[in-house]
Each structure stands twice: as structure tokens, then as C-alpha cells.
Amino acid sequence: YGTSFFNPGSMEEQRENAMVRFDHEIEAGKSLHAMAYFGRYGYSQSLPYATTNTGLPTYTYTSTAYDDWLGQTIYYDQQVNKKLRYLVGVQGTESLYIRQRDYETIPGMVPNIPASYSEFALFTEGEYRVCDQLSITGGVRLDHVQRLDDNVSPRLAAIYTPEKQDTFKALYGRAFRDPNLYELQYFDPGEQTANPKLKPEIVDTFEMVWERRYHDGWSSSLDGYYWELHN
Image (cartoon, one colour):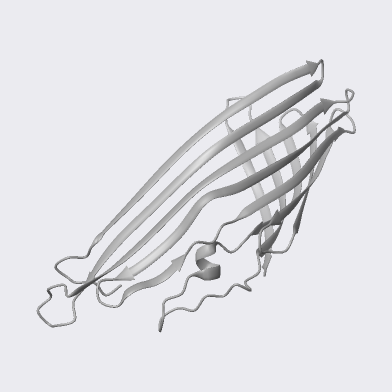
């Protein structure tokens, strides 16, 4: 960042996480699962700059960011019969406190962003065993993220095992990455402009896999994949 050669500054990160989980077997083949988690992230960076050729710092740019969040996941899992199994669930995350502050010792505060965020998701997945050699798995997830569009993420997999040592897989999935608050709202006068209209990045993945196990304990895998990214 063009800081002083003799004093490049400092950076500190802090992470804290806690989780509690509950698993309950309602009856044979039916179970309920719940999880709650808390996360905390802190970031602080101090960058001294020199405006003369002496190399001595004449002003300091400080950037700080803090985020506390709470999340929950609940899902129900059922083995319907020998061939069919499915699960359905919900997930949510809510920010408790979030803020980014940047300031300089000369002009003072630059950006001061107190934005919050929340997200909510519904998901389901099912596995059907067509025969002893072939199983098909399909699922879909619907995500709603604050300030952004809803996203639907399907997935599909077919696994074929003609013989004990060979497994063939055909896989498809869609995933997305939402712009974070830094990308949406961070600004630095004269350097960077906020863009609250950013859209998610979406990727569709296609993959073919051949796995083979050998009698002496060795195994091999041959993969072919294609990714298509767009936003």
C-alpha cells in the first residue's frame, strides 16, 4: 500500500466460535437434528505513510472491522424404505453487531459502515437406490440474503458401481457467492467507490469421475470437469 519502508505497520485478526448441537432419533429411520452457533471476527490494521523522502511516518491510516453473528440449522432426516432416504431443513444467520471504520490521523474518519446482514435458507435432499449398482441423489437449496436477490442452488449426482473395484460418478451442482459488505459499501474518497448494486457470482459445475481400487491397497481416480461462472 505504499507505506513507510522503515515501518510497514501492523495487522491483527481475532476469531471466536462456539457451537451447540442436538441429535434425536424419533424412531428407527427417523431423526431430528438442530445446531446453533455463535461467531465473532475482529480485524485491525495500522498503516503508517511517509510524505517526505526521510522515510519517517507522517500520518497513519487505520482500518478496523468487527462482526458478531448467530446462526441456527434444523433438519429432519428419514429413511423411508431400503431404496429411498430424504432430509429437509432450514438455516438462518443474523448479525448481532457489525461495523467497519477507517480513519486517518490527518483528515479523520473516512468510511464508517454500520450495515447489518441476515440470511435464511430452505433445503432438501433425497437419495434413491435404483439397484445395488446405481444410486441417484438430488437436492435443492433456496437462499434469501438481505439486500440481494434470492438464489436457487440445485445439485444432482448419479453413482454407478458395476463391480466392487470400479465406481463411476456423474455430478452437477450450482453454487453462488454473494458480494460481502466490504464489496457493497466500502468507499475511500478518491480511491474506491461503493457499489450497492453488485449481484452474486454463480457457478455451474459438471464433473465425471472414475475411481478404481486395486487388490494391493492402491487406488486411482480420473476426473473430468467443466465450470461455468457468471454474474
